[in-house]
Length: 468
Image (tube, rainbow, N blue to C red; front, side):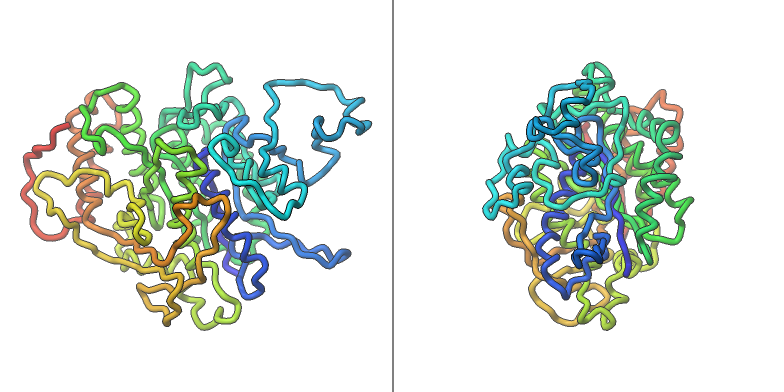
């Protein structure tokens, strides 16, 4: 086995992971699939049954898990549903302490619990939380909570707020970085992470999914730095959510204080995470759509990329070397380890999933970006794999994915010159507007060095005419 552990940070990221595992669920009925890569197997010898739990570590603010209790499906003694257990003696004798309004289960989750043959369709009102439509059962060690921060389901796009007072928000890179280092690092590594690693025979790497525009970017950066120190020989893929900002929207740089802060967070998080990751995927976060819907679209990309590592038992020995994260990394970087930002993220005819496609070209850059490398993942044509071509199993759809995203034939991802446009735009912005930041020169140097990795040909852009 070559296990991969998913670490998702934020409510949006947890929605994506939920959609991903929902799409894997049909594969459990296919004996030819190597389900052990993303799922841990539990064998009950007494009943002669096998169950699977996601290899995942989910981070969220308080209330972010919705109606799902940590031990809800693990131990009846540790979880009591007062709405369905009124005759339970434990309910009558328990001392009740209510800290917030009860979050009720969604119709979809109730139908799953009851084993209904037909499940109701989910919509914007019934899928506010990722747990409202999660098909697989997570182990208690998968859940990690920011103790002093609260999620507001009625305002999904807002960052978690401190003590549920809606005055101070988890919207600063430094806040997230400090929170992990000072409050969560030791406990996370010693408990939940350790338990996940114990279930792996041959761990090949981690997928880290995080937001970049708020405190989660700093939180993930500190976590990744310590992960690499603890486990330096495995692969790390980071998927960073990018919301539209003043650059992608072509707005004045100081249009609002909040938008400028978001951009500062994004720049710092991108530098830190791309430096420590084997591959970095800048994905677009559509704030105009509810989480379940937008991640139900993005899962086509995420599932396609990870289908490369989720192989067939029948052909396992024949192409095992091409189904490793290290091989996929080498195919996209060709050994240029610092040129690891995957800016081309396309699936079929859908809109590009890369945030960088929404960014302006820098000064005199060409309107077509040079592609250093490109890989194709085909889910229908089963030709022999090659260095840059990966045939995988057909797309297994979930009823939780929007109807507009029901097909997935080919994904094309690549490292392109477009990253230079983004980095140079940011470098110019930092020079102009980061006047009193203590890390200003360090950020400028990092961006300048990074942009060199994505240069191709000759440029004449000493004087930028970018109007921001």
